[in-house]
Amino acid sequence: MIMDIDTVGARSIKKIFPQAVTIFVLPPSLDELARRLRGRATDSEEVIKKRLNRAKLELKEIGDFEYFIVNDRFEDAVAQVRAIIEAERRKLARYDVKRVVDLR
Image (tube, rainbow, N blue to C red):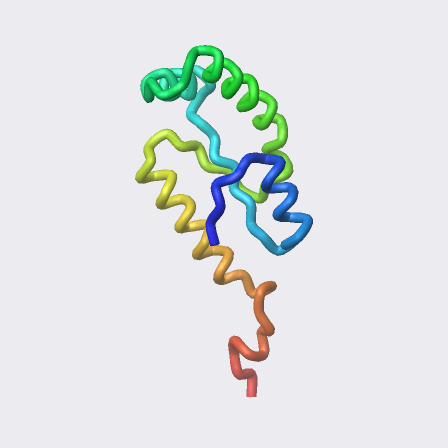
């Protein structure tokens, strides 16, 4: 399951499901984030300023996550998420090794 949640939501999920894998998705820069938000033309300037301030606060919490991705190009970010999912699926710590490989 993939969830798009803020840092508060991520902490809540980790409390309930400590095995959950967290990925912090970063914009290339705060200036680029502002440009993207304004380019959408869906929010008022006041809302955009609040979102930018929230982003600055959330950036300070990146250390609470296992992975990070810089969303510079959407296709690259998607590929990186897929790579993380594949790596996590291959972690032996998630399996009973004796069941994965018959050691007889």
